[in-house]
Amino acid sequence: MSFPPAIPREFWGHNFDSPVMLASGTAGFGEELLDLQCLSGVGAVVSKAVTFEPRAGNPPPRLLETPFGLLNSIGLANPGVYHVLKHILPVAAGLPCPLLINVAGESVDEFADVVRVLEGSSAHMGYEINVSCPNVAEGGAAFGVDPQVVLRVAQGVSRVTDRPFSVKLTPNGGDMVQSAEAAVEGGASAITVCNTFLGMHINWQDGKSVIKRKVAGYTSPALLPLVVAKVWQVSNAVSVPVISSGGVSRGDDVLQLLAAGAQMVQVGTRLMRRPFAAAELIDEMKKLTGE
Image 1 (tube, rainbow, N blue to C red):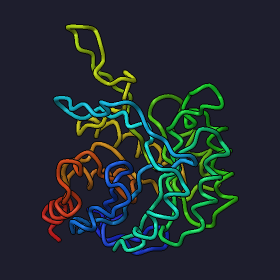
Image 2 (cartoon, rainbow, N blue to C red):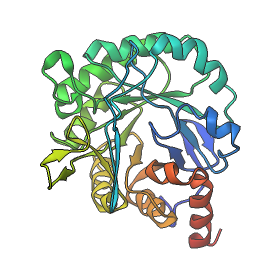
Image 3 (cartoon, rainbow, N blue to C red):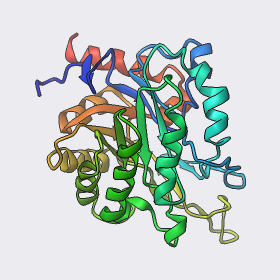
């Protein structure tokens, strides 16, 4: 890799105008940002999670702002794969950048089942397989903590699609490098590093958590050094590209993650505050690199 890393880049055989992706769960399927003309600087949109059956999600409140970040407990709320296929993807086909669909499941087989249905659309370039969600069929631990389970999920997906897919890993247990290697063995085209870190807020006055499910996913610029280290570890262990996710708030953060070995970099929490986040990050990067 050349330094500083180039801003336009080739990824999965496609020439992307930007290395900045919009992280799953922060941009829907991109259609609202398209209507608001907020997709300038976006290399790709990663959709919110799609499951086989509709999910209402966790009870509110689902979000809690902290002094240094955000706790979220959305619970994979979505209308189900058939609704997405029939009503959402025809609109998303008009995006000016590639779309990756984030896929979640409650069992090993459900990931492939969702992808099989989504293969009925040409609107998306590929998938992000979210093995950070709990394996309900096997007791509730995240799929991604067990490399053998990750292997089975990736193999199942690779059997039903020829499109590229990334496997999104969890930082909350297990060995991420081993899980990444298992995903590649199963046919993954990339690894996403990583999902949110477990966090919690307790009101000391009454001893209760504001988030009804108590433990939630934590995102924060303060997590950047942790994500950089994991990107570096995984990118040095696997032969496929690494997509980073987490900790980005400045153009310098994107450049640091690219230097650590990421091919693409997702932005999420900043986007929720600033819908033009991608364009702002690209401008900051160009000033830093002199482009």
